[in-house]
Image 1 (cartoon, helix red, strand yellow):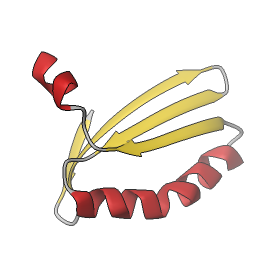
Image 2 (cartoon, helix red, strand yellow):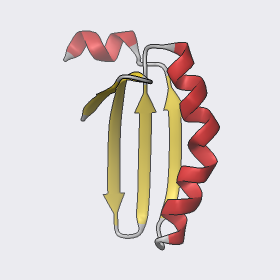
Image 3 (cartoon, rainbow, N blue to C red):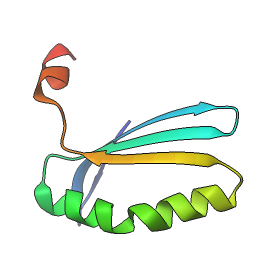
Length: 70
């Protein structure tokens, strides 16, 4: 899923949920957006873990090869 906000620009969200395990990957092309996402990463993880999930959050730049295949 891709979302776009005025403040952060484009963010691609990919998630995988299996039982109580959530893997969440956030990618964004703008470095400023990545900085903001990384700054909030622990708070997001804490909130999701408070819901009983085991969480892995990854914030990264998009892989250019992956985008070429889409």
